[in-house]
Amino acid sequence: MAAMDDCLFCRIVAGDVPGEIVHTTERTVAFRDINGQAPLHVLVVPRDHYANAAELATGDPETSAELVRSAHAVAAADGYDDYRLVFNTGAGAGQRVFHTHLHVIAGRELSWPPG
Ligand code: AMP
Ligand code: ZN
Image (cartoon, rainbow, N blue to C red; front, top):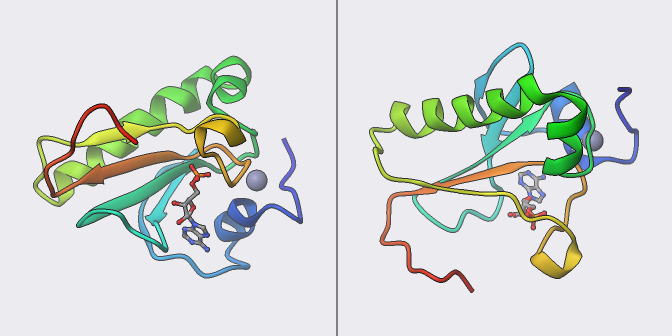
């Protein structure tokens, strides 16, 4: 699937917009959230553009799994056994960037249910 010129995360993947990249694989890129909500807050994205997690899981299941493996690697690299993974899907659930991204959040007490 082609990169989209007007997609912020496609542009970070392409290197056209700077991102603090912490981990990469053949299919994924992980970079720090610009507005981190915890000591560790990283977004893991597929290199290819998919609007949300379900579209990625349908269109490219192997990359969908790789997002989770990458997220685990990011947390483990910083020494975190406990972490939260979040896919916001749809504006009503808080999705603001419509290139799917897996939030990896760790390093503080995380309450439940989320806000
Ligand atoms: P969501 O609300 O789930 O769509 O998450 C989008 C996330 O992208 C938010 O947590 C933002 O802080 C983050 N974000 C927005 N712009 C950038 C950027 N240029 N670099 C890194 N993270 C960003
Ligand atoms: Zn994109």
